[in-house]
Length: 604
Image 1 (tube, rainbow, N blue to C red):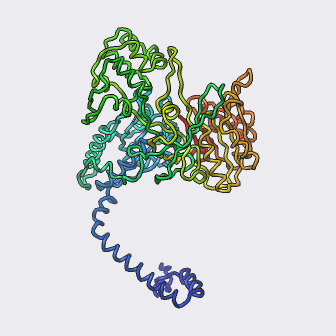
Image 2: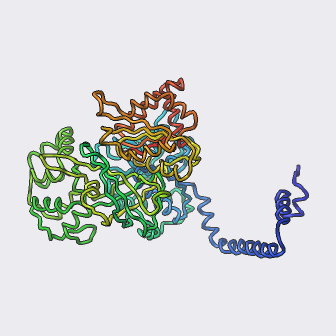
Image 3: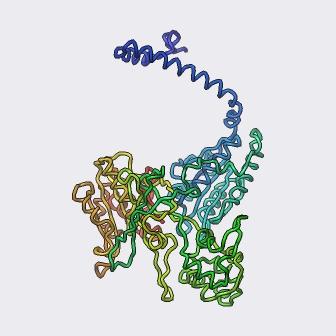
C-alpha cells in the first residue's frame, strides 16, 4: 500500500518546511530576498562541487565500509594509552580499515558480545588495578554476567611500570578473561614498560598484517614511522611541551606542619593553552646538578664523558640531569646494579623479594651507590637507568578566572634517610630549584572522566584529602564564574587545622557568599583518636543519601590505595543502609552512578 503524500511529488519541500518559509518571508525585505537567493544558489553549487570532488574517493571509502569494524578501546590513567589508541586509529584508517575509537568509560560494554575485532590499549595503576575509566568495564567483564565471546578476535596492548610488583596486571587480567570467555587472540598480548615507542610501532605493523590476512579485501600497509607523528606541531603535547614561566611559588602549610605543600602559579599568556577544570598539568622536570655530580663522583665517571642515547651523542651530566630517573630506586635497578658491581650483599638481597621491597623503599639510588660504589663506564651506568618521565598534577585553577595562568598544588616529597634529606624528583624541582620567572616545560593532560556536570543546577559532593583538594578549587572557581546555582559540599581531610587547612581563606569566603553550601572537615591529629574523611562520610550518611537522590554528582580525589578505598567503602555502607540494599546491590548502584558520570574519581 502506497502512503506517499501526492503533495511530495509536486514540491521538494515538506509541508512543515513550507510553513516555516512562509513565516520567514513576512519579515524579509527585497534586498534580503536577493541576498538569500544568492546564498542558497552558492550552497547548491557547493554541494555539487563537493560531490564531484568526493566521487574519486568513494571506492576507497567503500572498502572501509565493506571491511569489518575494528573497535579500539582506550583505557588510560595518565594519557599514554589514550595517545597510543588515537595513533592506532589513525594508522588503521590510513590503511583503509574501518576502525572505531572509544574511551573505556564511554563504551557500552553490554554490546561486547557483538564485537568481531577488539583492540584494548590499557594501562595499570595502583596495586595492579585498571585505570579509573575502565573500572565499570572491568567489573562487568569479570562478573558472571559477562557474555560468551566466541566470535571475538582481540588483542591487548598493556602499559605498565616494571618497578611495580604487579607489572601490567590490568592488561593481563583482561587478556585472560577474554580468552576464558571464548575470544581468540588476534595477536598475543604485549606488556611494555615506560619506554614503549619501538615496541608499539612493531606491534602496530604486526597487527595490521594479521588483520589484512583475515580481511583480504583491504589494501596492504603503507606504514611509515612518520604516520605516528603527524600532529600539528603547534599543539603542545607530552613530547612537544610548551615553556611557561613561574609566577608564584608559595608554601601554604604552616611552619610546624609535617607536610610541605606549595601553591605554584605559571604564566601561559604567550601560549595557546586551553584547559578545563578536572584536567592535569604535565611537568617535565630536571634532576639537581648536585645529585648528578655526587653520583658521577661515586662511580668515578668523568663529568665530560659522552654517551649515546638513541644514536645521539650527549654529555653524561646533561643526560643525567634531563633524561633519566635518579630519585626513585626500583627492584630492577637493584638487580642490574648488582650484576654490574658483583656486590655480595646486593646479590643476596635480590633473592628475597620481601627484603628487596623493603630495601628499595628505604634506600634511594644515590645511597645504594654510596654504600656500594664501583668504578664503571658511563655508558654501562646509563644502560641500567630508567628514562625520566613527566609528573602530572591536578590543575587547581579555572581558566575562566585566571585567564593567562595555570595553578597547581604540589606536595613536596621529603625523606630523611641516613641523616640526609632526599627530595622527590618533580616536587623537589618545582619547590626548590625554580625561581620566579624561570622556565618550565609543561603540557595539558585532558581528563574527561573528572568533569563538572553540564547542568549548573546539579548539586556536587567533593571529597579529597591533602593535595586532593586541588581540582575542587578549580571546580569552585568555575561554578562561581558560571553563576551556578547547584549546591556544593566539600569533605576535606589533613593532619592539623592550624597547619594544613589548604586555601582556608578562599573556602571560608565561598561559605560566606553562599556558593559553598557545606564544608565538612576531618583533622586526623587534632585529637587523641584519629578522625578521617571516611568517618565524616559515615556521620553524614543520611544527608549524603538525600543529595544522591537529588541527582548529586560525587567526586573523589586522592590516594587510590588508602583514602579513596576507605571512602568508597563508606559510600557503599551509606547506599546499603539508606537505600535498603544488599552490599552487592549497593555495588551495582554505585557502578551505575559511575556509568552515568555521577561518580568520578581522580586517584593516584
